[in-house]
Every structure is written in C-alpha cells, then in structure tokens.
Length: 451
Image (cartoon, rainbow, N blue to C red; front, side, top):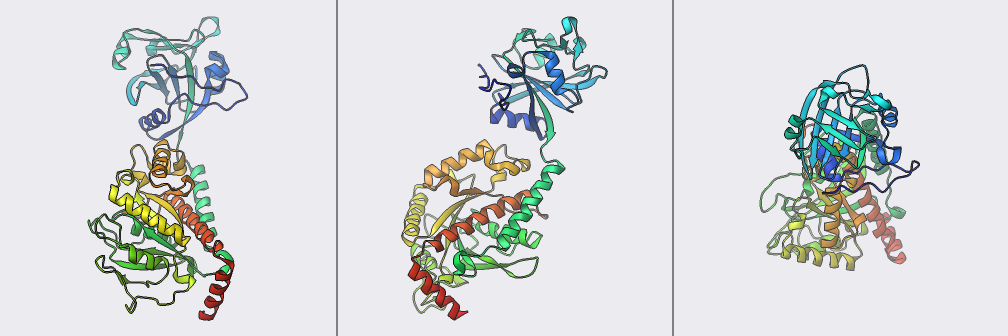
C-alpha cells in the first residue's frame, strides 16, 4: 500500500501532514492525547539530517514518521533532540488504523556520523539514513513491530512533529474568553426591531434525543453551575408529556434572558406529538403546561388554548434535535414525519435548524476534540449525512455535548451550547425580519398595548 506524498513542495507554502485524519487521531490516542505540530518535512526541507536537526532541536518531545511503501514507521522521542544525552525512545508502526509499539532502551537520538550525516545511535537498534532515504532496524525490533523480515527499508518521505498537549493553559484561556464573549452577546441580544421581548425557540425531535438536556445545559451555562430543571430520562415514551416554555433568568443579574426554550412531547412513529398540536404550537395557540394527548389534539375552549395569540406567543425558530449516534438510523416513518413537519414550517415561514447532541460519545472523539469539533472528520461526515438525509443546509446543522451526568461546568461544552443557541437567535431574527411589514407593525402595536 502506497502512502501518497503531500502536494505542498515549496518552501514558502504551509506544510501538510501525510497522515490521514484517522491515522493522526489514532496516533494522538496512542500518545495519550497529544497534538501533532509539523516541524520538518524532508521533501520540502531537503533530505538532509542537518536541516532536520536545526528545525527540530530543543522542541521538546517529538515523533519522527517514516513513510514506506507498506506502512508508516514512527520514533517517539520523549525529550529534546540532543547529541550529549540519552533519551527514551518508543518505536511504532502504523498500518491502516492499527498501531504497534515497541520501547527501546534510551539512546542518543541523533549522532554525527561520517560525511557529516546524523543517524540514530547504532545501539538503539534503529537508524535513519535520511540522505539515503533508508532506515535500518534490528531483526528483533522488526519482529516486534510486525514488519517484513528485512532490516534495510527504503522510504519516500520523512516528517517530524512536535508533540504538544492538546489543551494547554493558553488554549483553555482562549476557550474561556470565547465563552464569556458568547454569554455577553446572548445577554445583550435584542430581537429584530424589538418586535418581541423574547424569541421563542421550539425544540423538536425523537424521544430521548436530548431536548430537555439541551435546555438544562443552556441554563447551566448562564447560572454558573450544572442544573437539572427539565426532567431527563430514558423512557421509551419520553419524559416530556407537557408543553413547557422555559424562560431562563440570568445568573449574573437575575433578569430574564431574551429567549424562551419550548420543550414538547417527543416525535415517534406511532403516538408522540401529533401534527395538529404542533401547528397550534407554531401559531401560538398553546400555553405553558398543556398536557399532551396524542389521541386527541387541543381544541378551542381548553384551558391552555389561546384564542388570539400575539407575535410573542408564536414560535420564531424550530430546532430539530437528534442524537448524533442514531440520526442516520431514523425509520422511514420518522423521516416521513419530519419531512412533513418541515413542509409545514416552510408554509408558516418559520426558520428551522438541526442540533446533533452527544457528539462527545462518537468513536474517536474525546473531550479535547471539542475545541475544534467541526474540523473532526467523523463529525464532518455526520453533518454531511444529515444534510443529505434531511435536506437541511450544512450551515444550519450544529453539534453539542449536553450536561448529563457531570457535576461541574466544562468551558468546552459551554462554548458549543452557547454557539448553537446564538445561531438559533439569529435564525429567529430571520423569521421576524421576513414578516410582512404591515403584519409586523400591527403585531408591534398589539405587543405595546398588552405590555
């Protein structure tokens, strides 16, 4: 199997790793959560040991990756490149997504040999002859790394990476600053033209998708501690049997925040939220704490029925909520129901977005990946799959990791939750801005009278 070389070859161009996303992720996990920063690439900086040493010396822990025609061979050095100090070295091979590791005794990482060439110390059982594009490995190490029985191996490319902590103090400082910026932006948000004081965001989705958990996560971010106001459970019939409208007070000053999250009964193939009730909710006819009955939708005269709803009673944005791990397995009946709902939303002019929960439970995704989650390949592929399955624009699909069993807040989770919420507010603004001018002016006048 050939490993294609990178297309960047000019010195003034950005270096790009030859590793695939999956290979790099497996390698990061093998190195216990390290980020790989590319320092040296032989095909760009020349196959010259002196150049390698100049670029990689005093960089802390590094890993040298050798790309052969059959596999990738790595040498993880737990200290700086030095020629006067022995340091621990771990050899490994990367084939597809499998990694085999082999510790070798501490050695001199690079030692000057004849003709000015630097090679790994012979006593290490592993030598790189960069100028000759050859690596020499002792037979016992070859067997441990499951390599072909050839101690003299040619290669096409060599790259050296600095191994950094993924979530160092500097990065977490940036995350906390972004979190505070998002909190401030949402606190000071004002709906379009002040047509309403609070926009209403309806959360829709299958039973157990994480609608109530998302509300709890939003409230937790603004209160500064994990809260569980909305009941969360794993019942097959769902925990939300009532229509709830949650207005959250800011934990900073106690004032109501400029949005209301509306939690409804879960969608299901049989039963669950019925279409008639949904239409009444969208148009603002149903008030807080209405008890759902999927066999019998609400009717005029019911205690929770609003005869003449105002703009503030209507839904200004709908958010479809799905568990990221099961969204691609939705049944034909569920997909048909969601598509029918989307058609009704379009008729009503209500903007809708998609929220994928539980992103931190995806394979290979760990907490440190949340800092740049939209660049993670499994997440990108999942978003593209949802886009194709549901027809929702890629820019309207967001991912979050809700608070479910945590005791303490996590700035990384808060940033994802707050970023998604901010996009929902912007979507609500689109709905308000799209209202016919006469209707908007009439509704604004009614709102002022009622206030």
